[in-house]
Length: 205
Image 1: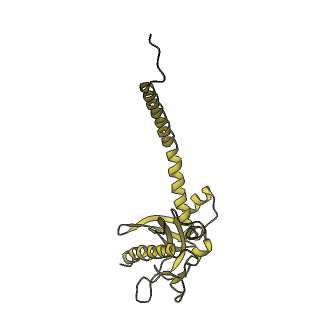
Image 2: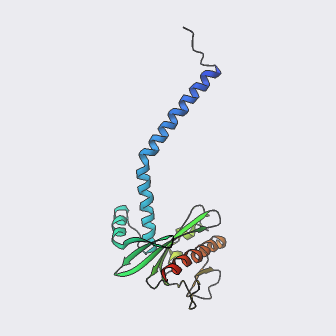
Image 3: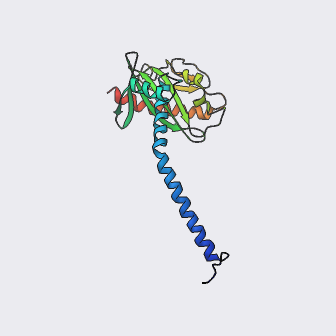
């Protein structure tokens, strides 16, 4: 029997190919095994973000699941846009998901609105890659998110008026920019105006 030449190119190529197949199989197996858990974690994170917009924070996983089931009464659609019909202390709230662009990547958020479809009840924002300590404050600063509480979406003429500005001159509709993150703040402002307009116009018909 001929001795196997482990230094030959053919041996190295075959050996490498076998290793690649084995590693790929193992990675695929692990991915499939962990996917249900990953999907559950993503779903729970979304539920927590919705609760944050309703000013409900500090809950662990089981508590968040139970609270979400208690306050979120169903998913509805305004045109092609999904929203959540909620109830807090016997009062109806709407939670609107929003998506936009920040300085370095995508941003998103949930805005909870009173049943007048004009008064913001709460807000939560998220991001993909904004700068820590600057643009990332749209997510990390609860104090900044709470500045949106009580703000009006539309002015007396029914036009979208909610905005984020360097100097607040219309306190009913405006919130200060995040310090050092004007461009990210502008992205949030655009996301709010464009996103909320779709919901408000559909639901007021």
